[in-house]
Amino acid sequence: MIFPRCILAALLSALATFPAAAQSAFSVGDVSAAPGSVALGTLQVAARSGDSGSSVPFSIVNGSAPGPVLALIAGTHGMEYVPIVALQRLRDAIDPKTLRGTLIMVHVANMPSFLGRTIYYSPADGKNLNRVYPGKADGTLSERIADVITREVIARATHVVDLHCGDGNESLRPYSYWITTGDPKVADAGRAMALAFGLDHIVVDRERPVDPGASIYTSNTAVTRGKPALTTETGGMAVVDEPSIALVKKGVEGLMRHLGMRDEGPGPVTAPVMLERNEVIRAGFTGMFYAEVERGHTVAKGGRIGRITDFHGRTLQEIVAPFDGEVLYVVGTPPMTKGEPVAMVGGKS
Ligand SMILES: [Zn+2]
Image (cartoon, rainbow, N blue to C red; front, side):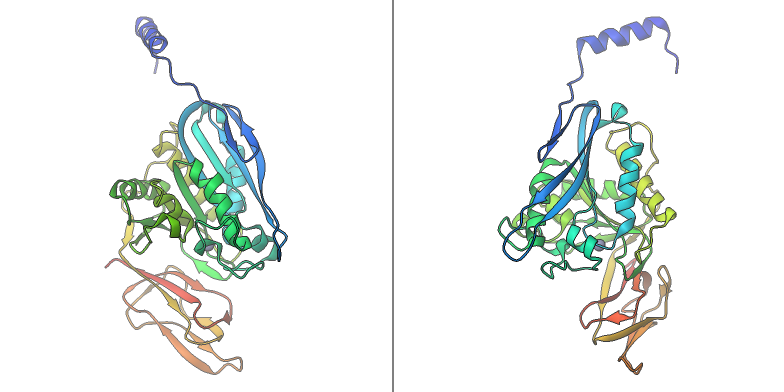
């Protein structure tokens, strides 16, 4: 738009009368990013008896004007590569000079699991990082990693996104989790974040604890501290694929627009499928799992999802759908341990 000269002069004088607040430097750990700049750093998790500690690589993209502090956390599970790769690319594609507010990107939250190539559990202590929040300063390695991320990242942010995908064994169709528990204002803002991220299936998550001292999950650690948050799932099976990376990129760009951090970006998803009912189906036996459906398939109540056999191939259990719904993820590799997930089904009601 071209302004007539007189209007432009009036606008400029109005801006001079009410100068915008200046953006400050932003620090995480011992690294500081000046306004309009990018800084790279690593948080150290000190060694204790029984382990050798860990490191948490991060980037700060500090805008040139004030605004929200959006934390983007990747690599909570060690074989969920899509968000890890997507964040590196996003960091390089965002111009801090035109950004309002600040991005904190955690590139690999769970380094022991990433380098150890383990699903779900850390090779250091056998714990699931996304079940030990807000962590413990004197706990096991996963608990200490959670403690560092809670204090240095989540506590510093105004909004948090925990970026997952199907783990190394999970074939997954994209979806996000909207946490409804806690402060209704925070929940409403979380819903708006889910719409802005743009994934067309949203699991309505009514089961999260409300105690900030026992928040259990990464995004719930934010929610229980009054900060809107979201968990996203894009990709799976340890594949680094461009369509899944594009979903993360589009999602973060949509969020930055929604939060007023940038003018450009995609608009929110208009008619998402809200999954009011969901269930993670767990194995009744240890053995081998053979899926008979694919991610995204619709299933009727009682319909076959797969079967678990013993190590000679004899069927131990037929896995069936608990209600009419859609397969959000299904395990795509044979190893199966009693009590672990075989599939997740989401339904509209
Ligand atoms: Zn995960």
